[in-house]
Each structure stands twice: as C-alpha cells, then as structure tokens.
Image 1 (tube, rainbow, N blue to C red):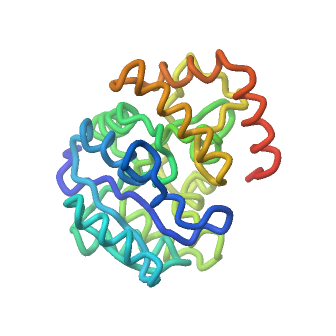
Image 2 (image 1 turned 120 degrees about the horizontal axis):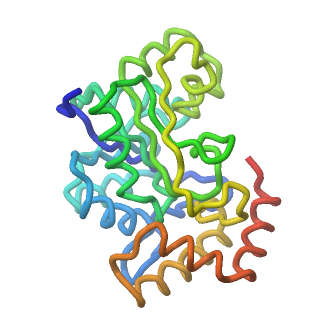
Length: 252
C-alpha cells in the first residue's frame, strides 16, 4: 500500500474544560506544549503534518501559531470532531490519517513509523497499538497515535449520529470490528500495561509533572526515546504515586 495522500493530523483546541488553553501554555523553554510536540514529530515524521482546530474564536491563537510554524491549518466543528477530521482530510486531499492528540508531549515518533509500515505492508481501516487489554487511545500513557482510512471515517458518519462517536473520532471503528478491518500492534515489552504512569496532559497537575519529566530528560539526552521516558518514571515511586492519584481523580 502506497503512502501517498497520507498525513498526520494533530487534533488541538483551546477549550479544554479541566485546563483551558493547555496546549498554548509554555512547556519547554519558550515553546508551548503544542510546539514541543510538533518539534519532536517534525524531526522524525516521514509524512506531512496538518493542524485541525476549531472555528471557535478562542482557537484563533492556535491557527496563528500553526501558520507561524509553517503548518497547514484547518478549522472546523468544535463538537463534531469526526466531521472536522473528514472535512480537513477533504481539504488537503488526505486519504489516510495518522491521528495525534496535541496533549501528548511524549508521543513516540517511532510508533508513527510503525503504524505507517504496518499499513504499507497490509492495509486496514484502523491500525493502532493494544496495551494489555486496552486500545492505546484509552490508556493514560500518552505515547501512541492511531492510523485510520478517511473512507472508513466517512462510513462511520453514515452509520451513526451518536454524540460519543462524533466526539471520539475512532471509537466506533475499534468497537465495531465486525464492520471494519482492524489491526492491533503489540505495545513495547518494557511497558507494564498496569503501570500508573500518566503522561497525557489533561489537568494542570498533569502539565506540571510532564513538564518536570521533560526538562530532566532533555538535560540528560535531547534525543531521548520512549524507553528513556519509561525508565525515568518507573524509577521514581513518588512520581508514580502522584500519577495514580490523577488517574483516580480523572478516570476515563
């Protein structure tokens, strides 16, 4: 399967209920959380990167940031995220999407390459990682992207108008494997699926913890990888304890 018309779409908005404008907050030096994620992705990503934000006035700053960074920007529905992705893909003639959430500063670029290689070898409607008994998107690690075909998203749009599936772009696909070709890739062996490690940023507490971890890792090795992140956190019981509290307070 060729990878023409394939792109990463970063999903981002300012209107987070728990921590508004989190993706625009200074995270590493002068870089915002969004810029930090984009910088790491851009260095290793073999396909174009697009920003999909909303038409809300609050997200004008995100559009301006994306433009300043040279990222193609699409603005669409705030609530109907499925529609936003479909419209974004149509505008930029994208057939296959690697979906990235902007609140995951430790997202593993190598995992994106794994998704693309898996799709190149055997096309599927949806490809992602399975961590223990969960799709990676449902974990609190914040390390992995998902790959989905745009025609499959259009099919979801035809099959349901339920708000759950309009807000959570890929949920319908992996919960209806009888209707789509789903491929699961195994997570790294060095990750304990039951770990309380939480590096997705949902709250201010998440942000501050992730910021400290990122700073320390950058001091030691600016080219740090996923295994470095996991080793750093797992060797610090006090970090894991705090992360466990955030998981309990903000369970999905």
